[in-house]
Image: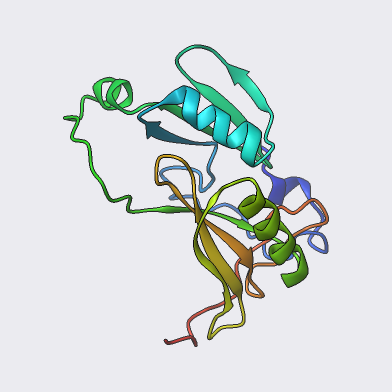
Amino acid sequence: MKTPCTMALPAVLPFCKPPAKNNIMEQRLSIITIGVDSLPAIRDFYENKFGWKPVAVNKDIVFYQTGGSLISFFPAKVLMDDAKVPFSPTTTRHYALAQILPTEQEVDALYAELEQKGVTIVKRPVKTFFGAYTGYVQDVEGNLWDIGTNPLIPLDKNGNVIRHEDISHLEQ
């Protein structure tokens, strides 16, 4: 199977190495599916607050293209039933979705626009000890979005992640 690494010139993707022979599963992400309480409310948020356009939608699920992958929202109880996992509503989310922007000015402009649209700003962007400039917003169901810059994660001209730089030297 051809991958971006095997199809690209080393100068274009210098971090690529031949795929390991012992990989059990290819290291890539195709879709993030998040269980939600209200599909209409989540669609309203992503389409009217973030300005996203769905690429596929029906009464039970919605998909949005996110660069080289998709994010989908599906009723939480149905998702848990499908996965054969007991459904237990929680009040705390234990994950954050993230979007990296090229500059602090773009981060500030996006936060200003989201705030104007009534999006909950959980934490305004601040400079971190490792040079990122980031904060958090929340969608209508409490899902966190970490939006900011990160000098350790370079982006291509389309805003896609190229790689993650070494962080073994960082300690908080």
